Image (cartoon, rainbow, N blue to C red; front, side, top):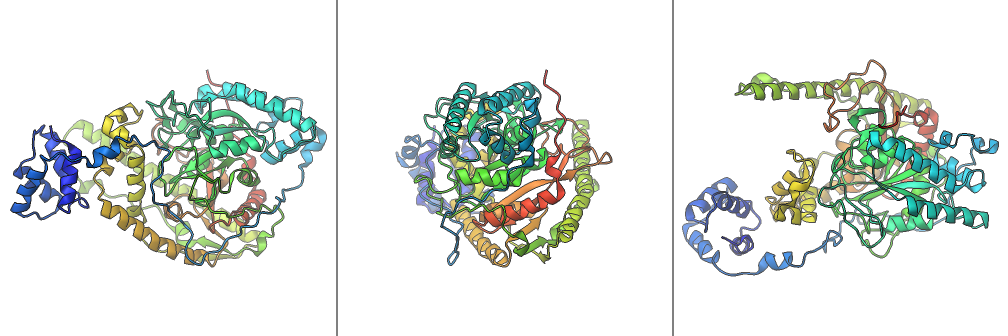
Length: 619
């Protein structure tokens, strides 16, 4: 049989490596089970790829295909692990940009008044307490780390059967850490506001001695002999790791090898993803805080669905060493918490260069809970708030269904579209109320628009990088072990990515640079931009690397439209009565201190974060 690598090298020698042609031709040969490529196949492939090839070139290509070249095959023999990044570094910092580099002591808020009265008789009454509140209980020795750890471990065990948010409980490690924390605090060696607090890690963070599954079939027993930098830093801060929490397989959605992680507000829904477990467990009061990751919505989406406060930091602020790579130019790690200040306290412990992740800048994050947010320049994405849901295309324009099954499928798709549209229309009042509240707070909201670019086309970079990160799965056929195999899932995406020309990947990167320049000019005039959580801003700011805070913005009423299907694995199954809505604040690169101060002011003025789901134990 033909050697695909030799064939691709031959195409490269003909100047065709930057087109779809090689992949199309190889696919034709494989589909026909051919022992060799024919001129007819070249003609067919050239027609599909819209590449003109002269007859004498075709003969030359056929001759080259029989040569024994090493090429790509030699690289594949290196068995490059996921932890090795390309020799290309994405940098969101543009020429002339400046950011603070001097680290200053944190200025956290005053101790909550609730601590003065002592610990509640039932420790579970603290399950939904903020990091700031729990920190004061522990610092004042009114609650021990061990007691908190045992309480959260008990809740993890109690609610996991229904919510499916835990991959592995790190009970032995956690109890040892908690006892150490209590001993240190008793000896007067208090490390700071995370000391003794139980937390959960998205299971793409390496933890020595504990499996790291990436949520994916085929990786259920994977052991990585190191701790991720973020894990090491939280250990140093005295935090207690109680669980490795779920993620959709290889950081997509909420479907993992153990099932579907559920939304605590409505267990007929998934928790969204890919930081499915961190958001679900945090919302359910089963950890004090968690660490998630985002490439394109993986903190934003589950924080919205589960009613958490999530921070997606600037690209290049938090090192990703020891975290599963999906897209080297877009991956970011960040906290998922119950309050904005909680996010600030966690970020303070995990940010900054580690000497390994070469994308990280020496930017300083100086949290000041007393920062005067009223002096900040605030814009809002006017057209995004005013935009009405798109009208649905008329089904009459489609060809008549060929079978009853196809007719049923079309009817279901129509119901889904109508449900999504109805939810978006219903949710507008929450966005409108947010703008009204901000104006009531005295904020001068200046209308602003994001520059127009083909942002979706730039997502080619994510597709190509993710397929590279897991190329061995595609080539070996092990992608069939992944739980979800729909057209939008990774297996099909990875296969499709092999047809992305190298030239087009680089063109997308160049377009991305133009967009970065244009977006930077917009942010030059603002410290914070208010935006609906859904919409184009999510793609834009993940491409440019700007930070975002996502926070609860109220619960839908009893009149909220319900989704017509109860499948928790249906990603569009969201909304409905009693479920959370969210709002997003965008900031300048490495402007997290100002961004979080403003978001905290809105959160405290509204109090939506104080609402929690009513939980029933799993069976």
